[in-house]
Length: 99
Image (cartoon, rainbow, N blue to C red):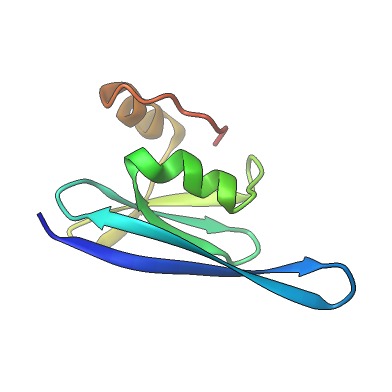
């Protein structure tokens, strides 16, 4: 099993023009499916299905304002609601967000 470490950084405004940098460390397992979450503000993160709930919560997304891509043969493919729901049900994981 090969794991890659990716740091996702975002800038958050705190108070008056001060910027705080938040880093999230995600471990990607190459034996599992890889997803990319892209928000309407340009923030993005890569994760596996088990971490998808945490990543969407940390990016502070809203329904309809983000897109999830699934990588298959190194090509991104947009995930629809039915496919995402079926993947969560197959892995016995609760989907904690609306897509």
